[in-house]
Image 1 (tube, rainbow, N blue to C red):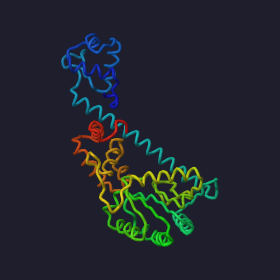
Image 2: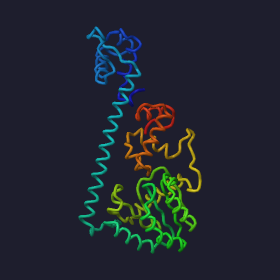
Image 3: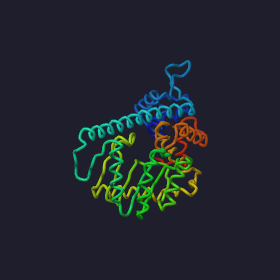
Length: 331
């Protein structure tokens, strides 16, 4: 039952037996848990490494089990530290990969591959997008992560949006739920709706993306700096996958004019996503970026979730969420 916290079955069995029989020696513990004495000694070594057993007061030759409330907190803190370290390694790897892709694009901007075109710099991205937008005939699909949109981006997109919708192009845009509390972004989305566009929101989005007539897609080279560079993709297989991603996300999204629903546990999609990220060991900064909110808002959401779960640490919040059925057993 405690394998998720780094405790194997034998060590857990011995720990439980020691709690029930504090004075039991190795032989008695072996009989109680139906293991060999060698296996019990190995389990005791594991428990000692995890600080779940300590020398008994006045008898250094005998070990005693620490109380469960202290022991579980030790395990959860240890696991949380491991998850945080793993998350840091993943973030570092992701940043290194993005940097490598970006450097490659800068070094070889003229190099072309079938179905791929590299665009470097915000001006070139906007110029190419303007040309492509004029060529759209039927459909324009977009992921717009990052939370509330900047006034500059909204102003720059208005002429393109007006041109598309004026020509009868079907336009669908997915924003983050966090834009619902940002008046300028809501006003921009409402303006799009009045012109005939459709707008929905979701708790999180994988990347910024634009798909035109299901023939061409534009995605950033780096999600951390979408203005640095982008790639245009025209391969049939790639477009099929990206369109499927958009449609799946669209079906799960909520129209902007409707109230965001809650799940059976009373959590909004944003809260449920924050809880999953919390349990996975993400930092406030990472959670804020995924949800498109400020660091302060991310901390507030995390604190509210921990309070609802009566958890003293973030990892404990994840454990309790799984126990109460708020999260799947395997994240």
